Length: 321
Image 1: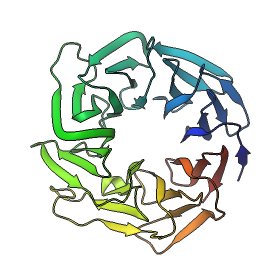
Image 2: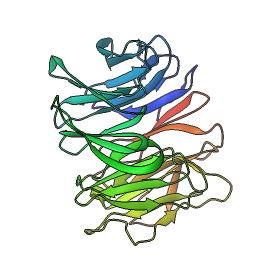
Image 3: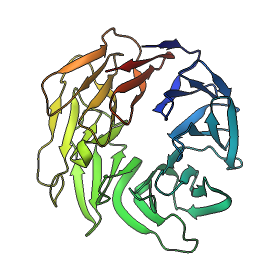
């Protein structure tokens, strides 16, 4: 169970095939082995596992998109004069999508010459691929836009809902798009009829959400416990109540992570603690009991056997369950 003390805040924690990887606010990428890549001139703003499963792709405030593996960093794309705010990658299609200002860009990990740039009316805050890696959702002010990743000339589908949408995700079955909003709520759309789903009642902003149990549950931060929305049946969470696990009136959930095909999830708190649970089982277990700085990054390995966490002071750890 390695622990780390980094000299910068951790932007993202991820698992590739080899182990845990951390992306930092000082522009570096750190590996569980202790290796370090100097990647960006400035902070890493976003990160995703490379489509190959080897290493991570990061976006920085230097406008660069870089693929980092241990001992190697490759520049994949640039957005001159812009910050790269959000990034996503699809192992199914091999594509990587990233946002810079109002532009959503798509590149192909197998074809260096391929690039598509899609323009939006407002700044793009989040990007996500559908399960097949063929469509991309981009969150922006006023809702989410859906694009076909490879088609150059097209009109996007606009999923409209007033307000600022900060991040976006697809359900694992591809039937729903969900966004986290500026005003302490989730919003969703059922794609077959664009029916709206309002998921509110949160005391704070929802910084992260994750699907688990093969898409039957959506776990979110933003409350005193992890909020779980049911996504079973043709109506998803519509007309159904959320449940909450790990309720603690002394702190809020800052981050959640899950293994999509498994039942386990993990939560990081604003007071620095980290726990994991299986909602179908009994109880939860703390993997970090001591309090400290707020958890800013959290990941669960694809097999649900390991957790990586990091806090805003640069303390980090990797735990086997």
